Image 1 (cartoon, helix red, strand yellow):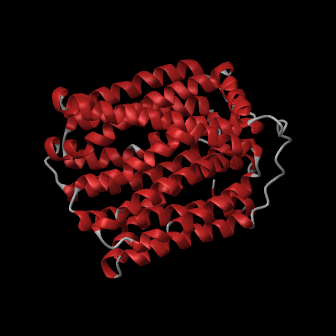
Image 2: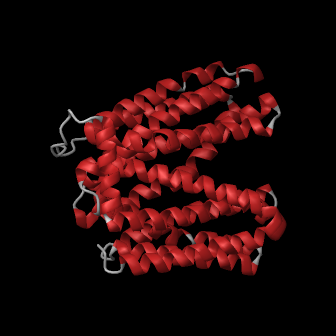
Length: 395
């Protein structure tokens, strides 16, 4: 797997993503605390995350059209430079009255990201051979987990020692460095596209038609969305689970999240090394089944030590699920449509996540945290069965 990092194009692509992710986590760790200190309102902090969920719903699938119309490398460079520049107004946030700038910046940055994400997803398969897609996706998926280990610690340190301005400048620098690395990328030429005289709407509709007529993609969207609904339930109920069922507090929650991040890194390495010859059509359902088993195990054992072990272990099936899904998406989508399909995929998962968080919030108190965790685990297992039946032998 690591041999891919000796290939110039992929190494530049991967390093660019890692640098950008670290910068994001530096800011995402410090900014919510800063907003809460200025306002004293938890809702002010929550609003930061809400405004960033809107662009994927509004723009995700449409923005993917442009990743098929325009040069993907250029999109990524322009997006990084623009996102870095957009952060500048955060330097003016010094009181509760100016917190509104945080929401504007967050919304605009998330809008730009909707163009960058499908371009990145569509570019990766052109940088490696088809046989290397699983290890390449493994390395790419590890970026967020690696950044979670370094970024939050750096963000907390900078915020404590220097305040918000240096945090903002660090994230800006990460975007500019990422853009510079992509500038030196030399990807293959994009295949000929559809006629540029076609409207964005017509190309968007063509992408939807491909989805509805492509059974593997339709099944992939359905099973992944169902799994993300379950993940949404877990995300909003994790704090009550730790507090009520495990008897822990913020420190214990931090330990659990660290265990999950470390498990994700190890899981990515294991999947990339051991599963290179495994069909993604088998990797996906195996990962889903493993996630469901771990969740049910957490509900059954209900102890902090067991939770730490299980969240570290879940890194392997979680990465198998994510890498299997991404590889199937790439293999079953013609290059000329990869931007659109990736954009639609992101929008679908954003809707599924909101649905899961809504269910978790609405039913957590009435049905109980343990029952909702158990339901999420069962959803994973049921989806695993559907994925195994549908993708068995798929490549």
